Image (cartoon, rainbow, N blue to C red; front, side, top):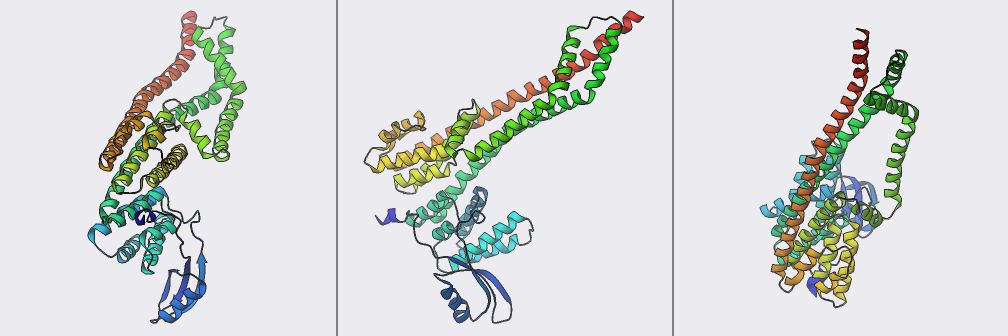
Length: 416
């Protein structure tokens, strides 16, 4: 029972106060202090430290500006793993890291430095590492990794395992994103060049056609189709561009207005693209569930945390229902069998749920299978779309050149 209480995420956290003060040596000090009230913070600074207080204000917790991004939490987890492995005091190590980041002037580095300083201040005030990270908006799976390490007494090992699986999956997600961005970039460039060529040279092409018709020539099929296409684009090109831009804007608005799970289900229904997204989400989910199971996190809580770490509202919803049925007394496999969104291959791997070590290995193996599937699908898309787009671009420009020069060559032959 005590072990399960360690994974309760509803603990009461004292607020933080930002202060500006003058210390006993006359130097200006700024930072954050954790206290249960303004009066307690003032007593700590004035009476305990002997500082002259210039400014003191409470900071809002878990605001959108203070919440850690996934990338920032992964960097912080790697830093914490190194500090834990080196057995250095976390407070001193975090402040040294913040001082090293002080040489960078970019907004992201400044924000990261402030987060490290706030975390060090909370630890110096006696707050536990997991509670301090919870206040700063760290992901639930990172907090669970630390609490699992505290329960088992292997914080360094738990953090190293966490960093390993999140870094691998972040690399996979970046590669998949590039696999989609590159073909989309090629297609966009080809579309812009073709439309620009039509708008800029369209009037010239049509004047050439009038010259050819004045000689009584019969236009070749390829030239006739090219001229009709040019005329169509000259008449309706602006409307086509407005429709394309309108579709993009409407898609963006729908992503904002519709619920996250509705948007996600639409994305998952897209052929090939949806399959890759599902493979990435399930890879995160199974690796996280295997990691949490391996560190003795209660299974129902591990399901909820793994669902949150997947960054997929459909998976998070399914894992929440899964955990509720598990707590209601159903077996792990029977509960998963009737929930939409859980793949059949994951359900089949639950035969070993009686042995947590074997279950953890099976989940990690399944996560690697999902990684490989997403990687192969992304590589296939790149290998297929790149030559198709290049051939399409070549065909379009050959169509333009041949359509223009073929009647010109015919006219010169007739005149000669």
